[in-house]
Length: 112
Image (cartoon, rainbow, N blue to C red; front, side, top):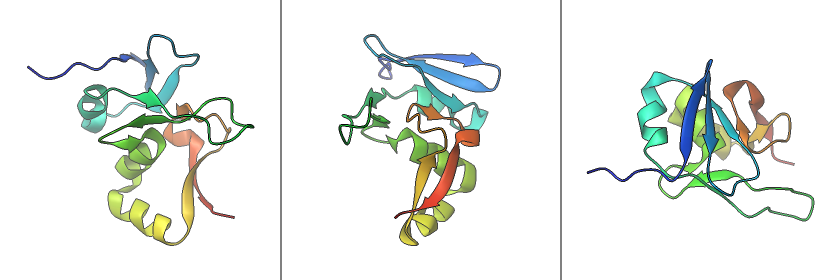
């Protein structure tokens, strides 16, 4: 029997809403059938904030990594993600909300 995620997932329009007991937020990402089963079969956690200026961390899974990078890899392809990373780009949240991993909120941004 497959392991069940500790998260709850709800599809609303073209978004996946990810929640977990005790979380102060709702994680968001764009729904696509080709990765939905893989994404929802895992338990997603919040990383610790990287600095005093960050309110909350990033959504992360031990197998799939950071949710925003996982989504960028699914949409643009792992080869593009790898190439952009090697060229010094990061996957950035345009609205600075680390829980908002919808593809419309993600961009490649040159690391300073």
